[in-house]
Amino acid sequence: MQFIDLAAQYQHLKQRIDKRIQSVLDHGNYIMGPEVEELELKLAEYVGVKHCITCANGTDALQLAMMVLEIKPGDVVFCPTFTFFATAEVVAYAGATPVFVDSDERTFNICPQDLERRIQQVIAEGKLTPKAIIVVDLFGLPANYPQLEVIANKYGLKLIEDAAQGFGGEINGKRAGSFGDIATTSFFPAKPLGCYGDGGAIFTNNDEYAALFRSYRVHGKGKDKYDNVRIGINSRLDTIQAAVLLEKLAVFPDELVSRNNAANTYSDALSTSYQVPFVPDGYLSSWAQYTLVSENRDGLIDLLKKSNIPAMVYYGTCMHQQTAFKSLGYTDSDFPVASSLCKKVFSLPMHGYLNFETLSNILNTLK
Ligand SMILES: *Cc1c(COP(=O)(O)O)cnc(C)c1O
Image (tube, rainbow, N blue to C red; front, side, top):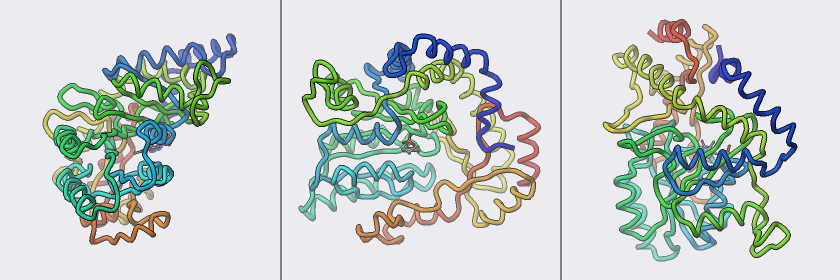
């Protein structure tokens, strides 16, 4: 059994994907070929924003956001402690200070109350300048943007949505990738919409930001890439990956339905004996992960392993516990919710091609 069955998806799409890749091999426009622009237009339309700018991966997408917002030493960017390393890494890489925020107990996303408390703390200390918030749609569930937008506006902070896991999610019909000033996503193969290598994208309604992103991703280009008007990076999505993504995006809405059906099957069967994922009214998750909470996590993972069922831990280490962030001096008592979650969470197989037999097998083992 696969945790994320990319082979089953490929079998389903083989003809279409092979044909699309072949057509790139035929035209030979491997960098910034026509598929890249076609994909950007389709992604922007799907998400419901004015601009989509693709790039080499989800981490670069976040780094480019730091560059466009001119995040620098002395600045503070707030982000959740319960996330993948890249979210906080780009802040430190820009020379700024990440200030970590605890999780909401029910959604596991950034806790708006704790965020506001920490913003006020940084202002009161008066040493560093609060500039932005990076919010993560953890495990596919969009964060609480209605409240987060109010806080960002109140303190004059830029809001960045890290939708690496959230792509496909919604709040009252508004799609992930459309929240905040800038949103980013990742097409790493295991993400809800993945390619066959690394890939990423940025979404924004801001024309000025969009122009800057297009410049920064190609060496700070001006008229062309030999006219360099600012210091940028080289971060483009390969044409072959764009071709793969065009075919995968076409079936993505069907896969989302299938992922939600699988999640509902899990939750219906497990809610009496486990803490199952909470999805607030009006929210739709893309189910990047289906995550349970149990005091006996390690025992359950062993039990599943004995039945050849793969289970994973996302995340066993919070940002404040990472060696790379040791110098920030946090302790677990600063983040009681996240510090407890990282000891108890585990995720079950989740993808768009889980059949009844596989689901039954998993559920019978857990019950
Ligand atoms: C995967 C992920 C990233 C980074 O994406 P890459 O494409 O692997 O660079 C950033 N943030 C979150 C929350 C992620 O899950």
